[in-house]
Length: 329
Figure 1 (cartoon, rainbow, N blue to C red):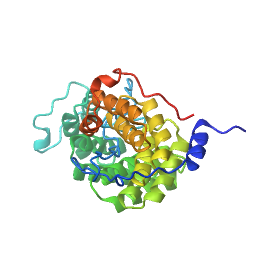
Figure 2: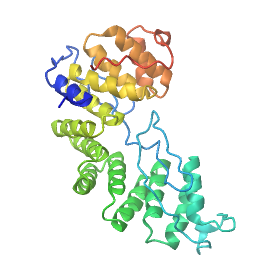
Figure 3: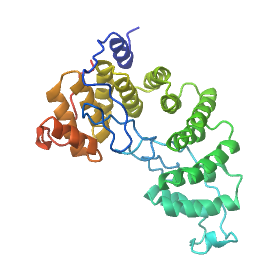
Figure 4: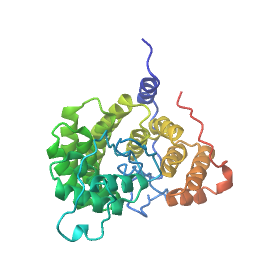
């Protein structure tokens, strides 16, 4: 049986020459970090805080990944909740139409991207019905999107306890715990998800993030590779694998994974920036400038603008909207 595209990609990379930059090893920086060589660090993707797929209802509207996002998974959902009010100030300014529930209203705001309003209605729903999984789950995602990590962790922990077999609750809990710097707990949540569904690409990706955050880079690489094998279209796992290889100064190995991430989502600025770094560190300066320019065009990558300027390039070096050529084959 022939090898899959991803299998060939991984196999080819295992034999790739490791190119170590004389200027120094790339390290991750928070916000404005730099290397000694002036090369702005690659970015490990955020834990899919955007592009959340809304719960399926009569009109499910799946979201799309953005430059600051990776998909948080919200599964098929019933229509829970009842019409009425909940004592306390939380409901003082909440308005329901006839026949509408707090859950209905919260879900509608969630789909519209108004996570603050979604949180308020979903919290009212949870107060009424604390035993309903999807209300607690969707509240946790909404709070995460608002940047309220501690509250999101509490809600997702509650959701996970309400459904001991829910992979998505544990995956997204792991993501928020990673964001909050609680890496051991993130790994524990990912391990629980793995015990339920070892075939999930998202499980291996979030597990890799926790391992990387704990400094266990070789284990993280293996976890990201499995994530890519399970889902070759998981662009965030591809980026995370490439990023970790860059951290290990394995720049030539990183290139094809980052090319593949960019092929799937050329609009994500930090994918392009990371690819530019891998190109630059393997001596492909023209390709590096092109990738940096595309990262700038995509928006959300100040790192790329500084990298592009340092190489003497301009944003006109690339055509807007055109992905970097996929040369991973």
